[in-house]
Amino acid sequence: MPPFGLLLFFVVWPAVYLAYLSLLKWDGLGARTFVGFANYARIFSDDRFVLALRHNALWSVGSLIFPPMIGLGLAILLTRTKLRGRSFFQVIYFLPQMISSAVIAVIWRWIYWPQGGTANALLHFLGYSGSPEWFADRNLALLAIFIASCWVANGFSMLIFQAAISSIDENLFEAAQMDGANWWHETRYILLPNIRQALSTVLIVSAVWSFQIFDLFYLTTKGGTGDATYVLAIGIYNNTFTARRIGVGAAWAMVLMLIIMGLAALMMRRQGKEAA
Amino acid sequence: MTAATPAQTAPKRPAERPRRPPLRWRKALTQALVFLLMCAIGFAILYPVLMVLFTALKTDAELARNPLGIPQHVTLVNFDSAWRDAGMSKLFLNSVMISVGVVLGSVLLSAMGAFALARLEFPGKRLLPILLTGGLVLPFETLMIPLFYTFKTLHALNTYWAMILPQVGLALPFGILLVRGFIADLPQELFDAAEIDGAGLWRQFLSVVIPLARPALIALSVFQFLWSWNQYLIGLVMVQDPNMRTIPLGLTFFVGRYSTFYTGLAAAAVIAMLPMFAMYVVFHRQIQQANLAGVLKQWTLPASPHPARL
View 1 (cartoon, rainbow over the protein chains, first blue to last red):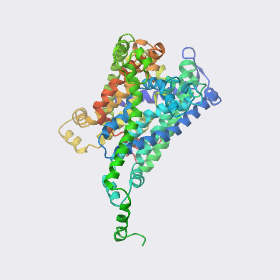
View 2: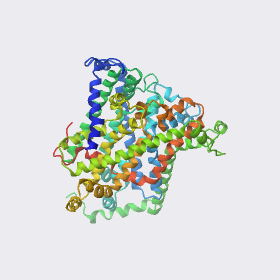
View 3: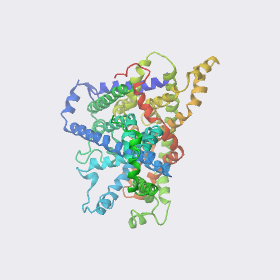
View 4: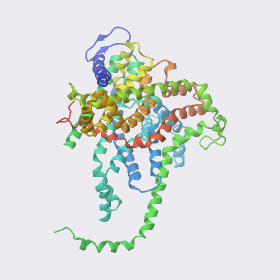
């Protein structure tokens, strides 16, 4: 079966090869030396690795809260209000999902441009007189990238929630209205309990995505700003392709792989229980 | 005993009603507020895109005078210079070749894989949930090192293949699960009837699965095209030759080289976005109706008695 053969070649083989590479000391060209778990010992005593893990964890907390909440809000607005032009708004709200990370980086660099960018113009309008240098500010760089990423990620949660809400039986809402339920009651007692499956889907995907983030970081700060935006995937890339320590890079990648597999296993078991 | 009978609750509600403004007015007011809110959100989301578009339509002189406003004299000169002088045409061609290759390969193979998964018994089938889940969640970030060195050993870096094949491989689990969800819903009688009529597996695949799964296949094509067109990291790792770069890759080198040529950069960004926007306008229904949640629900593959373990 060609599809499964390809799958083996692009999923199983690289995973095995990666595990092997993580046990080597190798510069990509010369001789390979087997060093056992030395690379792992090395990264766990590396401050940058700990920092990267912390940034990824922080990011996952943020992206388990904000995009799902905003996406749910947008989905409720779009499905539970009977306005004309809903589909127009729907198209607009999902639009950022169509944009490549390379373009997103270009756009947001302009927005965060310290002199005359929209972000600072907005701050001045709100009465704040400073001009923070977003991407170049250790305390703000991670937040700045997170806001740019939310701009895109909201659309995904919105799409999933919208599908879930539209599949709820309309009669439930009508019955509730007959009983005098207001907007909040409908949301709290009918809408939310019926989209739990969608919620868990959104949370799984957000958690998995939070650990593999790379593009926006590489394209805006390269993980720099005094390591304030160093994340796991940046560490993998830098160690392997910039510093040419393939074994170390592979060890970083193994950690990322284990984290993602762990999250996936956790969620699969949860879903299995819910289905049973 | 505590449950109120309708007769008890009924008089309560009309008594409350006169205190509120008339229902029709309140409804109209809420509608107007909701509409305004939706417009405000829409503007906030659209603003960054409009800003790039406006910048691309201004001359350098006008950008200096009027950095954030609507262009007064619309010009297309930036598009011309981005397309020709900055080599966007070459990047565009590469992007088209690669994305079309990825879509053709991944959609065809996903359909075959989904058909096999839904309708056939074969050795090792019980292991597939694990393989598919692994493929679904493992990102290129984890696999880039081994894939880079595998392609290097095969002397296949800096080729279209180096970008198409990994994308097809990584896209397959999603594609297979998306199409499988669709095929699994088809009645078994269809396949039985085809078999009685003497249709072999290939024939069943071509004349039953492909036509009936068309909505799923179209949605999948749209998703894969979108994903491939915007893909950045795979190109960054697999290709160093400037002549092989795709639009997202080229754009970032553009940023370095023309760091003060904002209008040209904006035009290049618009060229990068336009095909996706056009596709979105045509296919937004398919995107919204694709059963994305269904893909993830199949993580547990209901066919197996207990959830697959890793």
